[in-house]
View 1 (cartoon, rainbow, N blue to C red):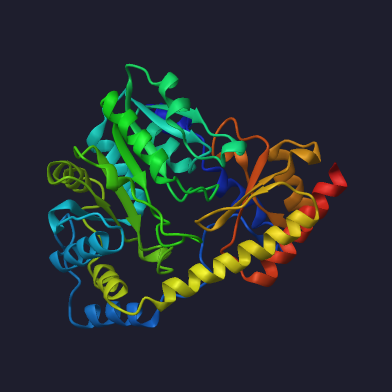
View 2 (view 1 turned 60 degrees about the vertical axis):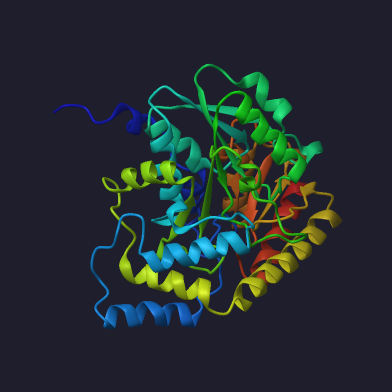
Length: 383
């Protein structure tokens, strides 16, 4: 029988999923590995989907999303992200994952290079590999808050480089890119004629002043923005995200959706409208809860002398476990087996991130603090 795809057969799995599978074998394991909000989807969002189903709104929809949702998203991006757009700029996607995958598909050809931060969300590397692209990692540094800097990217740009992926607030570090740095990054992309795909999924999960969108400096249409309902409204399983791009580019992204997912399921789109149009208290309540969890976990780690980046956004902590004397992978495995706490090794997010593990704040506070306490004890025990 003929062989299967060499690319898919040799592609590594997401390190997050590998940890999840191991941790599932331990019944009382505390799960700090997954970014899965422990909050329920707001009732009015669920009711909107139920009504849609009862009303028979269960058929195919346009590839780019139903007009009402695209209008609501355009209004949100214009008012809350301060990027003036129209519905023609908006593509509704099956989660932000498909927004990213379709955007990369629309803008690159096999052999092109995709510039990724080390560390960065592992699915971007997987997207590049499965599309026969070259993942080109650029460094970020602890003493700079793991913020991408143009000066560290420019020397790594080659003739193959086609697209830079930015993520603010960052998964896994929680770093937020300041306006001056964003401007330099977009200027760099313009000088080398690169596309910029800006993952701003955690735009509402910012603990200080509101973040600045990369779209602020999008003077020539080279920036594509990615967003999601998953974290903002605790709608991970609903699979609704969106991309925002110049209309011509948006048309290419929509074209890529047809052979992949066609369109987002119809009732979920009605639910997304309800999320945007309904009360926003739940968004602020979740953000404030994550801030409290961040501060509580940091207090435990600081008291134990475990170096940890204080995140300005997102729902994660990036913890330096090099003092344990173990690699990130060995630390993660032993922490699961010996202390029943699941984290994600840093090298899941980039080859140079061997000193770190990531934990998620999307866990009930009592379990989060217990898990962090066990992690701190392990660092002391193994040092």
